Image (cartoon, rainbow, N blue to C red; front, side, top):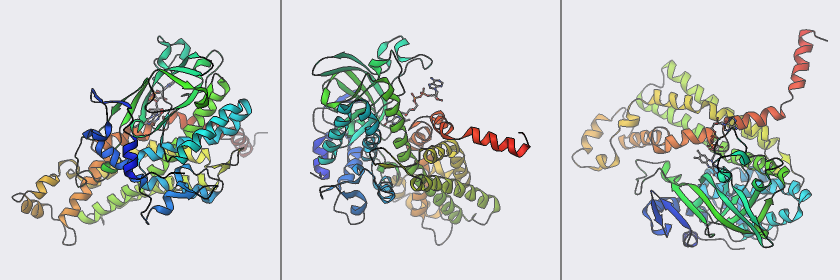
Length: 468
Ligand SMILES: Cc1cc2nc3c(=O)[nH]c(=O)nc-3n(C[C@H](O)[C@H](O)[C@H](O)COP(=O)(O)OP(=O)(O)OC[C@H]3O[C@@H](n4cnc5c(N)ncnc54)[C@H](O)[C@@H]3O)c2cc1C
């Protein structure tokens, strides 16, 4: 078991991976300006000696060694609770490694159909855990014309597929889009984007390959230009990691890394499992964000002298309701946990999907409330450079004053936080991510409707109406 240091993590990214950004080929991301902040963000998850986070970040494995908690397969509600503390202190490359939990979740079902794949899941898991590696969730296909099946597309590669099989392994071709932190991890864990049926065997494919595998190319899309200050961008400097448009250009995958190759009934099993774990991570983030929005609104109201106004109190209460519903969804999901056939404990999918749906459906309204309370300074506040300018400084101190107990610098930081989270590049990213990441809103509706007992509800309605 080897725990990496931040420096070793940085070094591990220097492995010949084929990455691009803004039209430029990047032979070594560790020295490219656009990747400095993302690498710094992701390397913080390798800080194991900080007493404030060590107990959250580490767990004891079955052999008594220490490993990052992202690899802890929960066996009890307490394990699940500890695991669910991770998003508060973790960067994107660690959180996407939850893909290994999704694999564990389906290991039993996979083993029943093809034990070799289940063995490969376990080997991959141990390899990542024991070498302190991170793995991306690589599921969303290009998908072409959404109304057509993979086999009916104009180009057969619009869903990633197997183009060749031989005694050593498979060869795959296709692209996976929007892959969070793809260039910042070590492994790309690929799964089918949806259920597949007879005739779609080549599309029922799952595997894991190292990022530097021949034929893998990643086009990065980042929203944070290099060198941004933490004064002006207090939140996004800690969240900064590009998404990857990942191309698999006839990539060879050896059999011991193949997790599915043609058994169509398992395609949906993988896709659903990842959907759940993506939404767990997403909902934890959304709940934390909702609490932050309450805090931002309350501080803005106090510092601007409007906390006593009844319309402001109503708006803050609405934010509180939102934060509480998300917290309760998570608490409910954890408490009403399910147990897989391999003894793994996982959050209740209904509570997670209800929470994710609610978060996605209400976020725009929450942002509107925050902007309403904050006023125009959200987007017109002068920058840190203006504040540090000797000539301008006194003017900003004078005209940004509200109350004696409020320091102008703090007020500026608060407005920067609001802008950064809701009205700037990262805020725009959040707006789309809340709806789409972990699957669009329709996906949550499907999961919840599938498990809700509509027939029982109909029986109750009939009984109430006196219908026999
Ligand atoms: C910032 C960000 C990070 C992400 N990270 C990851 C990641 O790490 N890994 C990963 O694999 N994915 C990731 N995603 C992808 C995310 O899961 C998808 O964006 C989401 O599933 C929607 O897919 P799409 O973008 O292709 O949109 P579409 O599928 O085109 O959806 C757009 C709309 O079309 C509807 N629609 C689509 N198909 C049909 C159909 N057949 N019939 C009827 N309606 C349909 C949808 O319901 C939706 O309303 C990320 C996305 C974002 C924005």
